[in-house]
Length: 149
Image 1: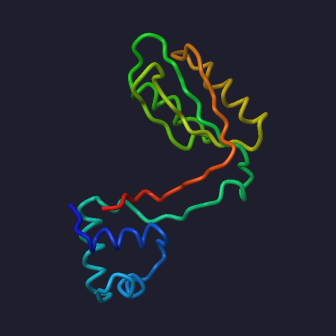
Image 2 (image 1 turned 90 degrees about the horizontal axis):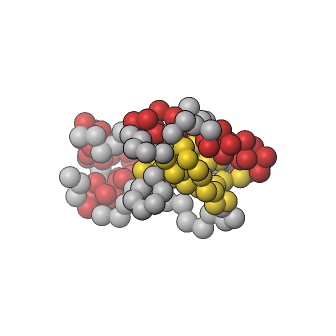
């Protein structure tokens, strides 16, 4: 469980994982050693799983984004779904959901033709009965994986 200071540290790290302990401390009113102790504890507790870079998909040539709803035949396990969609580098997120649809995947592709090919490959998976795609026009809000505490 995190407290308000931990949450503040996490917000700074989510905005810039390369921030030094001193820079973080200046923003949250703690010393660098105190920040390090808290970060170390959050790593040990599994709150922080790693440090990474956020890339701009469009700058890397991934201009098209869509959400693909996948409807499964019969009773398909989440493990089967995961094993299938993990094979696609274009799938950046996948979740089982409630309602009529079984699985929603977020896909990034170079262009519409590439997206079409990915959707065709997904639809050809043995457990898939049909798909429905929604193409993203504008990404209005993107937040790092940190919730306000």
